Image 1 (tube, rainbow, N blue to C red):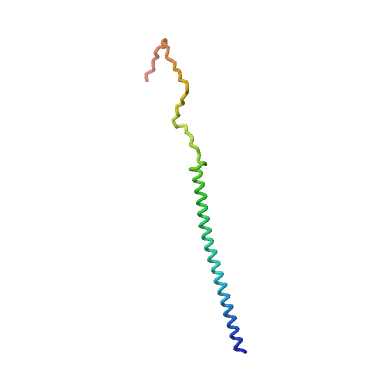
Image 2 (image 1 turned 90 degrees about the horizontal axis):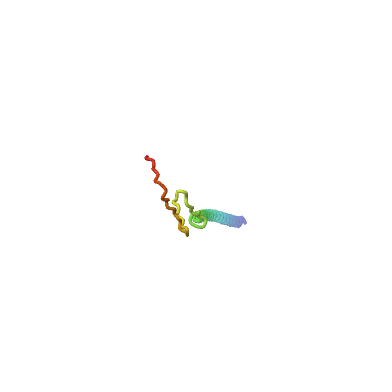
Length: 103
């Protein structure tokens, strides 16, 4: 009887060792998967942030959000065209020439 009990005990120990190693491998697999998922999520989040920032820049510089350029005070004014011609007065004959002061 003693010989049969030793075989059973060694069989139980082998089974416990096998189950223990299987749990360790499963746990290591979970850790590797979490690490991979976190890396993928970080890269995807970075790409998403860059896309959002790029879209905002494009919208406010090129799209309908771009400011309308306004003429500045130093710009040359454009001549306005009127429909009626302007009448210029000619100098009267009684006007005398005025002397201009010498510089």
